[in-house]
Length: 148
Image (cartoon, rainbow, N blue to C red):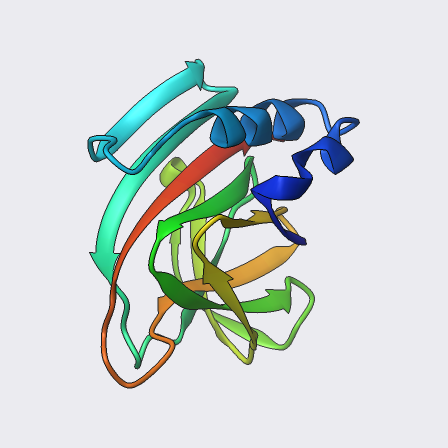
């Protein structure tokens, strides 16, 4: 897992498609972007612009096998619970056709805030969308999917 801000994109120059996606995030103003799914390089790199309310009670983590997630916060903030895939976990649902598996497990909190991003590899369980306080907050986020 990588956690950083777009101010440091140059540090990831050697990461191939991940770097391509980070440069795209750095060069694009998403503040007025329409919600939806968009392709950057076909199925190799695509992204989704999302808006949602955080949930103080969210506990289900997810993992992916075919794609790396880059989660970039445009506006708002959320806690993302993080754990290694090797943790003690219980699978609650699997949707292999959508490259997503859901788990119950203990995670460590990390706050994703405006202009920050996380690169989440297939070995990184993550529970995004958790409210930073007891009150939900509206967030706008871009999730880039990078084929492994």
